[in-house]
Amino acid sequence: MSRPWIRPLWVLLVMWWVPLGWAAEPQDVPKAEATPHAAVVRLQAFVDGITTMEATFIQRVRSNDSTEIEESRGRFLALRPGKFRWDYESPEVQHIVCDGKTVWLHEPELQQVTRISADRLDRAPAAFLVSKSRIAESFFTKVVHNEKLDLDTVFLSPKAEAAHFKEVAITLDKSGQEIQFFQVTDTLGNRSYFQFVGMRMNQRVDESRFEFQIPKGADLIEG
Image 1 (tube, one colour):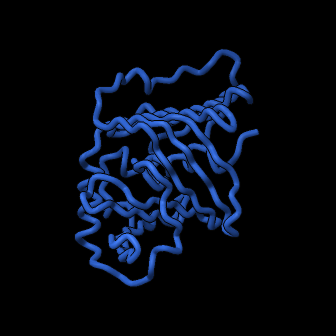
Image 2 (cartoon, one colour):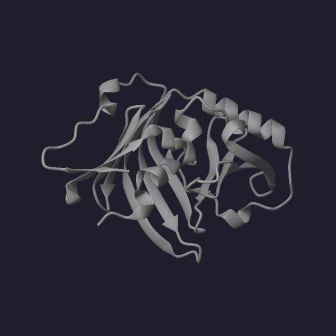
């Protein structure tokens, strides 16, 4: 059975490039404010330097009472601006493909395809990673210094009222080339942590991999 938290507009939150190792727990981030502008500029520069990425992913979701809901695994591929595919292999097979104009969610077990306009990606937490929009255009930002890591953490809160998440917390390492901490909190208080393995960044990608054909016999649903 399909799970709501891995529907397209929710699954896009994992479209970030995270180094090996699980993110630190959220309570490790203290409340004291740091210098917002420099940290946000570094984050924007990091995003601007990405053209493509391909990796294996592991996703863990915890509920607002800290209970682990589920662990998912698969592969994803992204090409900026606007194209990606997200192939879940477990606990159930799902394929999410965006050709820049349309997002397709294919659920083989249900013989079902959901079609969604890519314009709605502006409501997703990592939309700026595959679009040309700037962080400041889509998010309110706050910067907090993480004493444990001795690094600044950027908190992104969506400006759009209809956003599908509450907050994203991102900490770049001292080089500004990798993410040290990555967490997403949804509107219900559930938190997601991500690990990406075998990352290949800024490599040539065949754009045909972002094309999608509705399988014969599948039901089409307009999302």
